Image 1 (cartoon, rainbow, N blue to C red):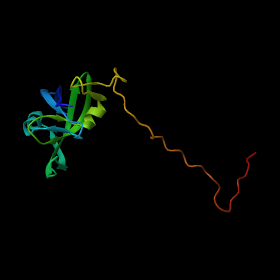
Image 2: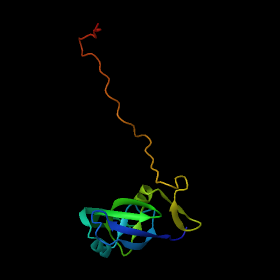
Image 3: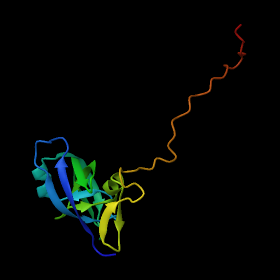
Length: 148
């Protein structure tokens, strides 16, 4: 599979009065997060939520800013996420791709909506069940009495 880029739009979700940014993002399912260059974080006037330690492909550790809230829009879908301020280009990682239910078509070298859910993003929530209320049982030494 080659290098895949996709056009997308970035915005500060908390500041709809600011202009959105169009970008051509590198798609990297080996990365987890959205990564943006410093100038994009400045232009969108994002808030630093803290710092994150990241490990790059060369094994080095870096302490970098984690900014939010970033709205990502592409292919008629959108999500709100945080972004790592790192590198010199926008990089779309696996978490926002999953959030928008996007897949990669390696032969066509493009990103597309999941063909199993073409109209609305789908998420899996298997194994998540509401908690069962505790069953009440008589306290030790007490018996249940039938009320007439």
